[in-house]
Length: 176
Image (cartoon, helix red, strand yellow):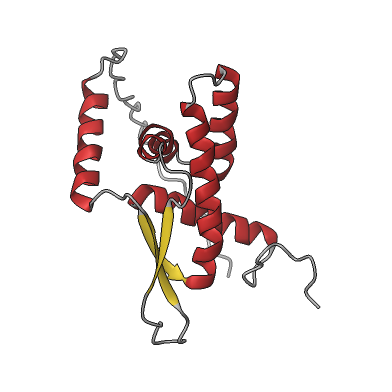
C-alpha cells in the first residue's frame, strides 16, 4: 500500500529528482515554457508556483528588508542562476501581482513515438512572446555594458626568457 507518500518519486532518488526539478523550473522561468513528460511537469508546476508566490511576498509594502533578503535566498536554493532570480523577482512577481494563484498551465501534446509516454507543455499563463524576451535581454545587456566600471589596466603578456641552447648529451654506447 502507498500510504502517506506525498512525494512523487519519478523513479529517481532524492538528489537526482531535486536537481532535475530545479533545472526544469529554472528553464521555465528563463524561457517561459518547457516541454517534458506529463508526470514531471505536474511536479514541476507545484515547485514553480511556490517560487512565484515567494517572490510576490517581496512586493508587499510592509515587508521588512530582512524578509526580502530571506525570500531571495530561499529561492536561490532552488534557482542558482542569478539572472533568472532577478527576472523572477523583478518581472514575474510584478506580472502576477494581482493573480491569486494558477500562474502556470499544462497543455497536453501528442504521445512521444519512441516510448508512447504522455508529453505535455508547461507554460506561464501571462507569458511574453519570444521576440519580447529577446528584446528585453538585449536591452538589459546594453544597460549593463554602458554602466561605468572601474577601469582596469590591461595586463601585459609575460614574455618568457629564451632558453639557452644546450649541447646535446652524448649518448651512451650501446651494449654489445
